[in-house]
Length: 258
Image (cartoon, rainbow, N blue to C red):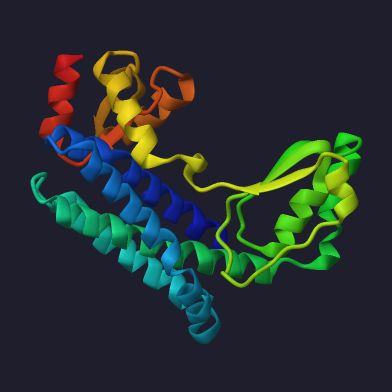
C-alpha cells in the first residue's frame, strides 16, 4: 500500500507537471506565466509538509493516503478541464496537484517507515558486501532521516548520497565528520535542481529551433482499448513515451497522421 501510494502519486504529479508547461506554451502564454505556474506547483508540493506530517500522526497513514488521492483527482479535473486561456485555473490545479502529492507521499513514506523492521538485517552492511566497499551513488526517496543516513553510510569514499524524499520539516540527520574527509557528500534535489525561470525559456528556445526533437520523445497516441499495444511498444523500444488518450478522435487523428 505504501509503495503503491507513493508510486501513483509520483506518476500523477509528473504527468501533470510535465504536460502543463507545454500546454500553456501552446496556448500562447509567456515564459514568465509558465515559470510562475511551475513555481506555484513546487510551493504546493512542499509548503504543506508540516501539516501533512501532523495529519498522518493525528488521523493515521491510510486516511491521509486516501485524502491525498482525492486531492490529486480534483487537481487533475481542474487542470485538465480548464481552458487554455484561464492560466489562473491551471495554476490552481497545479497547486492542488502539489498538495495532493505531498499528502500521498508523506503518508506513504510514513507507512513504509512503520513497516520497516531492524530484524530484517542491516541494509548498509548488505550493500557494502555486495559492492565490496560501497556504491558511488545512493538516492534516498523514502522521506526518512534514518534512510538518508543509511544512504550516506552505503556510499564508498568519493561517493555521493542524494536525498529526494520528502521528510517532516523538523527532521535532522547527522553524519560523521571523518566521512566528509573521505570525500563523501550528501545533498538534496528537487525536480533535478532545475530553475524554472532560468531553464524553461532555454528549453523552449531549443525546441523552437528544432534542437530538441520533442515530437520523437512523445507518442504515438493509443486509444484506451489499445493500452496493451502501448505497453508492448514501450517494452520493445518502438516508442519512447507512448500515450494512452481517452479521446478516441484524437488518437485516430494521430494514427492517420503517422
